[in-house]
Image: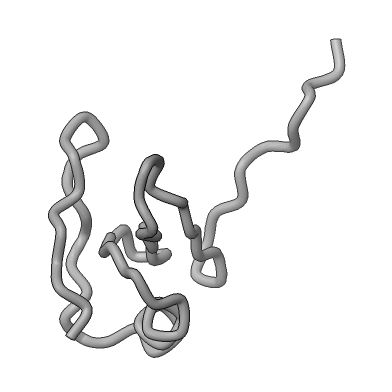
Length: 71
């Protein structure tokens, strides 16, 4: 059987952005595993592409991501 979707990409050039259901917020997931919620997509992309030194791996998949302010 042919899978409906290709396998998920991984690597240093892969960033993910998820819409948080029921909100106007976006969850950014860096290739290093750090996660952060944003309201402004421009600030989100600055954070992802700038890969600041304060990125830390996100929480384990079974826990909800922490909400950080975007200021």
